[in-house]
Amino acid sequence: MKLLRFGPVGQEKPGALDSNGEIRDLSAVCSDIDGAVLQPESLARLQALDLTSLPLVPKGVRIGPCVSKVGKFICIGLNYADHAAESNMPIPEEPEVFSKFTSAISGPNDPIIKPKNSDKLDWEVELAIVIGKDASYISEAEAVAHIAGYCVCNDVSERTFQLERGNQWDKGKGCDSFGPIGPYLVTTDDIPNPNNLSMWLEVNGKRFQDGSTKTMIFQPAYIVSYLSQFTTLQAGDIVTTGTPPGVGLGQKPPLYLNVGDKITLGIEGLGSQQQVVKSV
Image 1 (tube, rainbow, N blue to C red):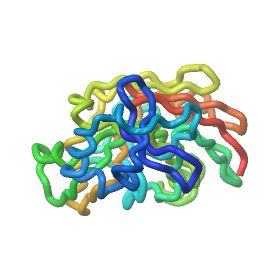
Image 2: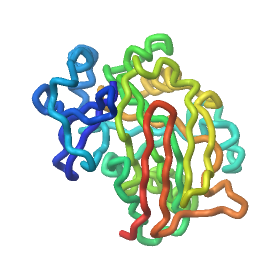
Image 3: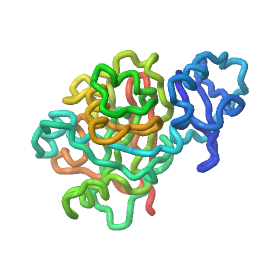
């Protein structure tokens, strides 16, 4: 099932994509796509719906972030060996963990806002995990049952803020608009193997990233289990899983985003995003 949210910023309604690729309004059956709806019992009720009985949403409507009321936005860095190499960083022995601020979350096609004093604005296509059931001290084998689904994320990064202004990554990762998610959350029954999905990203029509989740160092189930040893993952939390090579930082010479640049990205089975860089 493909769940999404549509409408103006701050006024999004819940929806689902039907078999014809059209959006159906879920407002009559749930108030939003959030942690409460993503619990296994609630999600099963949505999956049992006859979507053709629900109202069609007009074409051209804005698509919002696919999950609302996100409590935690946790990220895994350097999770592809070749990306670690292009970043001149060692391959981690354990998952490299940082966070994005939830105020970074935006719709999949909303603009990327270039912050003041930004000079190294970068891109990263990533598979994101959406938690569907609270997870604390769970095993890798148990982890899949705690995942509601997956979505596309562009882990937008400001490399000067991230790498040259102290030793904490968060301030280069959590600026407003730095976390586009969606267009939709695809439930796990539609993505039986998240460990082998092709993924890509283009800037101004030129492809820079062309990879696959099969080259991850730490796979999604392991990541969920690992994180659950340090914090309780809650329904509606987002966990991004790293990016393949081809980011701006890794180009020779490095190449960064400027106002007016257009980014398109996608992951097999999860849809695509499109953003334009704008000034603050």
